[in-house]
Length: 146
Image (tube, rainbow, N blue to C red; front, side, top):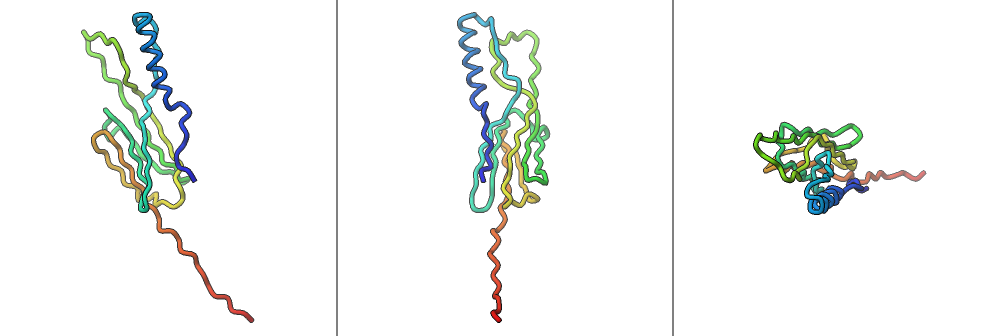
């Protein structure tokens, strides 16, 4: 079972940025498209002992992030990247950073200890590790023949 959801809009922000650059060059900044929400990038890796998520959250404090696991084995990461207030006297020529609230959800396999999740924040990266359960050994019992 695959735990990674396909993001059909991955790369959309790059396309919008390229449109912005093309229009800014040709129209001297006349037309601008904006990306509404921030969506953190997530790497998911697995080894013999655990499933680990590495979530890029630059400019966000750990107090602005919430991690939950539902009874249906769905890991959800929510939070908000707040826009910095523009200081008076500054004339921004280009704003490329994305802001806004975000939610990322992942279906987890059944072989994880979802009550033993470890999450820590280090240098703008949220690391979530979920240990794996030991595989159950097949049970055999002898049947007496009559």
